[in-house]
Amino acid sequence: MYQIINFKVHGEHDGRLIALEEMSADVPFEIKRIYYIYDVRDGLRRGFHAHKKLKQLIICVRGSCKILLDDTKNRDVIELNSPSIGVYIYQPLWREMYDFTNDCVLLVLASEHYNTEDYLFDYKEYVRYLGAADV
Ligand code: T46
Picture 1 (cartoon, helix red, strand yellow):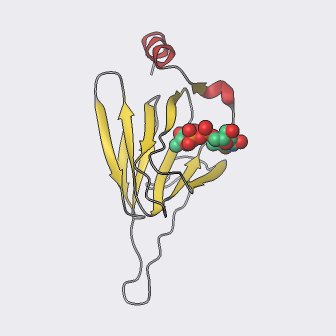
Picture 2 (tube, rainbow, N blue to C red; picture 1 turned 45 degrees about the vertical axis):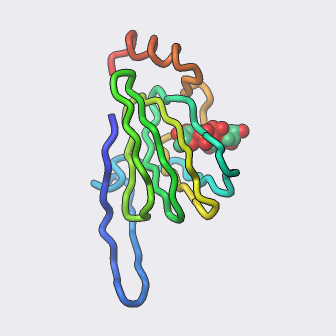
């Protein structure tokens, strides 16, 4: 349901550069939307939803935060603390993001335009959806 992707980092002494291309091993979908989350207040938790169809690659390009991924059987917590790591979520997966550092910038590449119909905002609804859907 998700995969940790390690990006190739170019350069060492003069700074670093990471290049991401759509429809590649790093970004296995067409990018229709990009958004970023920053200035998250201390102690705040975000997310609390799953997506039906949306695929996303989540990258912490600065600072750090944690992301909890819950497939109703397992709850994994991933610390995002490097711009060279991405979490690729490709199936419905409940997510919560927390422990944002003040400087944290969370960059997200998404396979679809913003559509509230694709969200499962309620955990029980998410469990029902998994039971009914062929995912
Ligand atoms: C996800 C996690 C990682 C828009 O107008 N367009 C957008 O593309 C997005 C993503 C959000 N918004 C609006 C909707 C809300 O009024 O921005 C506001 C905050 O969005 P939300 O509360 O959904 O943010 P998070 O951090 O809880 O979740 C977001 C994404 O929505 C979600 O797809 O996987 O980041």
